[in-house]
Image (cartoon, rainbow, N blue to C red; front, side):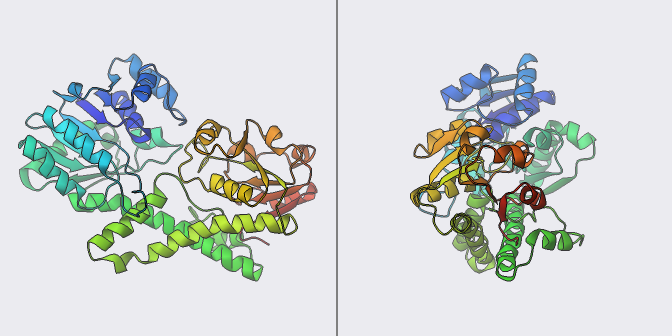
Amino acid sequence: MTALSVIGCGYLGAVHAACMAKLGHDVVGIDVDEAKIASLQAGRAPFFEPGFPELLAESLATGRLSFTTDMAPAQGRSVHFVCVGTPQRAGEFAADLRYVDASVDSLAPFLSPGDLVVGKSTVPVGTAARLTEVVQAVQPEANLAWNPEFLREGFAVKDTLTPDRLVYGLPAGAAGDRAKQQLDEVYATPLSTGTPLVTADLATAELVKAAANSFLATKISFINAMAEVCEATGADVTLLADAIGHDPRIGRRFLNAGLGFGGGCLPKDIRAFMARAGELGADQALTFLREIDAINMRRRVRMVDLAREVCGGSIVGARIAVLGAAFKPDSDDIRDSPALNVSAQMQLQGATVVVTDPEAVTNARKQWPGLRFADTVDEAAAGADLVLLLTEWREYVEIDPTELGRIVGEKRMLDGRNALQPSVWRSAGWTYRALGRP
């Protein structure tokens, strides 16, 4: 058992803290948000993540997990995970590192010789080297490593307890050997089951997450670019994706054309990667990411255009039901949500928009007070002239078109995620349209 601290108890940190306690470690989670800490300490998950409420309750009951707003309990613990957010800096592409810097500055006075600070936040390359100097200026015998996270929202508990790989960014020499030994003790359980381990220098470990997210964003935007070509030619992007996905060098995953990506990772991470490359004089290497970002944002505009087409050229005065507010299913995360962005655009263009979501309505109401929200599909779709599926929650994909047809004013479905069966909806009397499909 290792005594750990986890600095930052948002989505990443809270899940990481509870999972580390599940693996047998003694963990304290630390955050400046008093309401969040009170909720976690009481066993109430402050966000929606499948399996997390049960894990939180189980870990708290063992006595190995606690939460506090005080940094002092970090003292005496040997490994300290930094899990704070790195949002996009206002008005720029670059990452805002104020929370990372503040966390390390606050933690440093409580470090002891031999302690290891482990960054998990997604940061621009070079951050770890700079933070090493900050740590060692206060405690020369402490070390810093980087251990990027690869969590998928909706699968965060599984991805932490049984990761598909572990990456250690380690300092050089004996300090790196010691850091690896400490991390191996923390991750003894997944390593014992054969989880692949990649050990690297600090810079490479920082680049791994940025490169992974950039590749995924590229794959998504590639198929959405093909959707644009399919719309111009009458081809079917879903069949196209199926065909090229059989090639093992390409694969079918992340080739689902539609509204594009959002959330708190991919959009801001590829922009931060571009910004950092520019600072390093390597901006030409990542110019393609600008087009990836542009393709992704064009999908939102195209969705509004398609809504107008389906409604006969105008959405002024149209009642539109939007199914989905979260940026992806199995999450209540609305950061950079394509669904809410499209909803707001349609409302600005004169439509009456009502949005529903199984988990994200509460968050959406706070952040988008100008939109109207409903708690159920029936309430949102009552009398609707058009229904948009913008987040592919399972219960939306499994909606009975005949039943829904009895509620709406006009049977028009715009599938923003290519998640429905067109033949089923058309046979039930619906006008069905989707991005990249005839």
